[in-house]
Image (cartoon, rainbow, N blue to C red; front, side):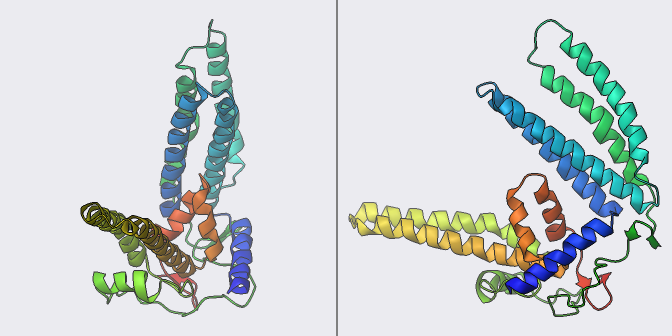
Length: 300
């Protein structure tokens, strides 16, 4: 399994480097994700930096990451329309002039006001994120161009794809109960294979309910312990909760890995869920990207 995951990961990295296009659907999802992460991280770091001066520098790491990834995403969107990413140099030069003017104006004001970082943030939205939104309306070239092929998921020349079955039906012939049994019982310890989008949405949608049921169950055991005075029930309740919690999380992770396989991506990408900004890319593969027919490399 590890060797197949590694092979698939190498293919994915090859494709990311050589197929430098992104379609409208992926673009708008990732742009919203980047902006949301950028907004939340700025707000959190700004508050923490009041007490911890080192967070002041972390703020700029997040700024560089957020703005850099937005520009890279914009470059790929231009490529999808057949335009060169070099147009970003014009955008960058114009935006830099505006940014430099406002930063100088703010710094030249006597004293560093509390609203300083909020003002900078608004300027960044004005010169980076708002223009990026308009790139969504560029037409997509549905054929091969010099930046890659918008119709193909994989362009790597390695023969073995990795995960079969080779075809997947659009029909969702199972009910919710059957999908839940697959997620939490039949395929819990089977990250191999593929799972559809609907399974991922059902898994995420029911996760909160299942966690609530676990907490309720443990509370019932603690109540019984209080009423009966059986002390061992307290220890059993704690260990049982952590066991069921781990079981549930592993079930969801196995589902995520199968869903990544369904979009022809290695299960190793699930590790990026822990990394801000990078996790947006994984969420797109999990929640939005359609299933792929491995034989034709067409999305279905």
